[in-house]
Length: 119
Image (cartoon, rainbow, N blue to C red):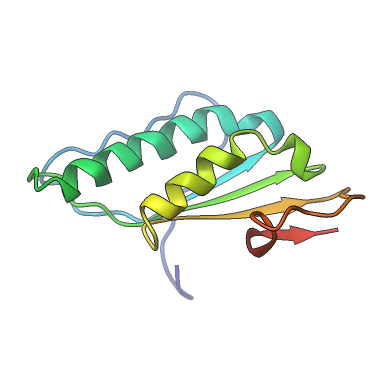
């Protein structure tokens, strides 16, 4: 987003991401805290599947980027972190994530360090 961009925000309830072939590409910002990652991780996996099809030359879906902001007390409580890192590596620039920890008391592993902010 840039200053003046229009965004849609959805909190809780029934939500899904199901782009159809021919739809204009959208850039997604997904924000999760704790176990609230579950439905958003499913959306992230769906986006990865669509990117995989796109790279396989299947026509139809036009995809933007997906950026996940995910917060937890510490890196131990970041569910699916290895899977999320894997998706970022498979689709660089298309799927990104910023992890935020609020009560980290131990060293953050080297693999996560570039993607973690907080204490």
